[in-house]
Length: 215
Image (cartoon, rainbow, N blue to C red; front, side, top):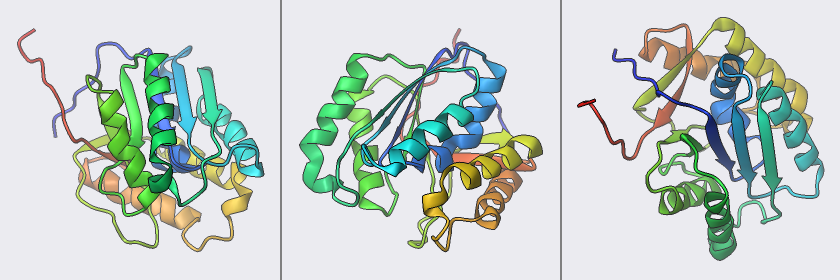
């Protein structure tokens, strides 16, 4: 198992189609980064849920998932499940985000996600963030679209447990969903941990990665 890191990680962009996507897909990674790097600047964009209880949940949740970070969150009002027909608005939001940020890392959905909103957002991100490391997070769901991943962020048991606790605490609107529970989140983290020789992990897809091995 090869372990690679970044020489500098000061600015992170995290995008989600829905409130809770970022926390489910990369909440453990956010916790690990923020605890290791106080003052990390995080720019987050969510395409739907603006002006609803979901936005309130998201603001409280991401504040908890990003302790000590300089967090800026924008939550838009695109209709849930209708992103493909609001492509221009989503594209404009991603372009605007790129115009005000030049991150060291982008966390986004993966391009082979079965949900049309996730997949559409994932396709838009590299059109704006062309020279950035983009890690595509995964979200367990009814569609059964989990696949073979390329990159892993090991999580300590403490971080994995904290992620699940925060998901349970901050998104009460999702508790009715059959897949939204402790067993699902820790189970997937345990499987991804096995795959990278750790107890727990979050896994990411990487569409394109440029190496610089000569320095």
